[in-house]
Length: 76
Length: 199
Image 1: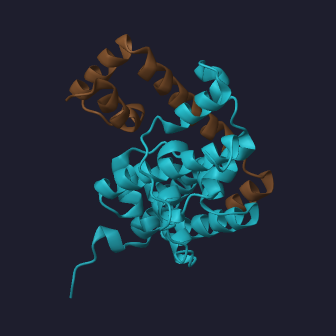
Image 2 (image 1 turned 180 degrees about the horizontal axis):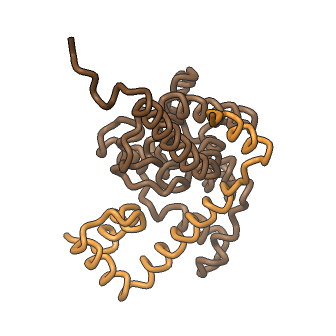
């Protein structure tokens, strides 16, 4: 039997990656509008991704930047 | 004997050289503007800061050397990230394979479900706060390379599945399956770190 929550869980990743077709996206949104169980899990996944990005937002050392610029071809 | 064409006069040659030099300088500037993004991705592809710095320098040295192979107007980000990932693969890190002993069959909600069950909280804000930033970095570095490459390109590099497929030279279906499995491995690592081995 068709389980809308199971279907919603299946499309979680492509939904957040914006890789679903418009029709699939709308279908998932319609389910999320009425299902607090899936909605909480989607929000959690969004926050988790934000956390991953924040955790990986390491700045490039300025010395490396200078080294890269020095690799440029000198202008004649 | 061939007539002297305009392109072979010293003036035309000088103009051609000047134009090429301008194009090259513009190309180098555009590639350098991407350096922060290249470093951020490189940092997660390899284990240490030193390795990441070497990899980025090598990437830029090769990019500047082979600038003629870039077709103006095409995706410069994808072009430079392709050099980066190819060089990283060439560094002989392919020995590390996916652990064969970890069947990952659970659904995508399992990390939330585990954390919710463990904490008793029902608010996603509080649940996600149970994960530490350091824990996320450690969990990501525990994901095997083939899977991590795709996660890093899509989640940190902001590439589409199609771009990631082009950069890694693999079919888009492989990008999707590696992303799927890689994220499950990542979540499993996070669950173990937050809830313990019994997770």
